[in-house]
Image (tube, rainbow, N blue to C red; front, side, top):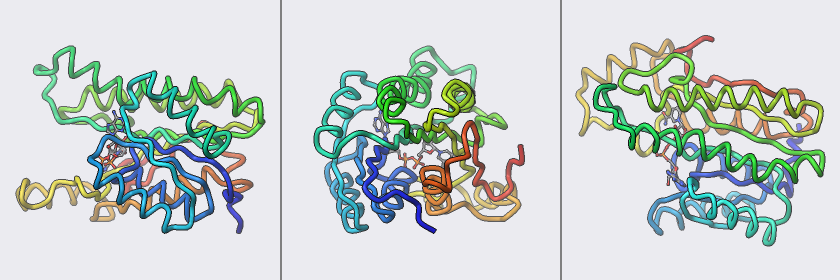
Length: 254
Ligand code: NAD
């Protein structure tokens, strides 16, 4: 079935590696023109750019800090100038270190909320008017299963991701019927370059984590990016809005 993504313009924040990179590649494979963003070093960014262009899509590399509102303005302007109006926006840049609640100071609380939640709010606010005018848009927010079940020593991160799910639902209500859909993906544990390897964690830790997942394994990046393609697609994605998708091997069943 056609995904209707050929020629669509997509911005994926935090796409120089990990899940974001997987989504950028998957959208490019469907013929989308993709903007790659991230904070990684030039080598990693260049390799993401190469992978996306080799996947068949046209790409633009626009590295920088998505929490900086002026940077976002430049990213949007340059994308529209180089590739055309933005059809798909994926708020993927995010993350958060484990910090026990009693050690959580204001700075680490705010910076985590800023990266995982405020940046999505600011990006959506910037791109949604054009989408509404054109009667088509796809906003995809990458949350986390911890936003649903909470996270041990992850109060800051889980709160931000829960907020992102609330934002998704609220905007879906406000813009339903406009042609612009807003959905979230709340992955479980996904194997990325950054997933702790045996060098840093004990075998016992890994085995315990795997036992928490009914399927008994971490997820793959492709198992998240396929969901993003479905939501972004048309007509396949047209009737989903306000939804949170849960690629998590059965770890959370909301
Ligand atoms: P990752 O750390 O491997 O990649 C993060 C990407 O975001 C990188 O490209 C990095 O350069 C970029 N980034 C970080 N801060 C940025 C900033 N301020 N501005 C622009 N780019 C920035 O992360 P990942 O594991 O691929 O996770 C991607 C998303 O999925 C995150 O939102 C994360 O919270 C979420 N998630 C991941 C998992 C998992 O198991 N990997 C599970 C649930 C949710």
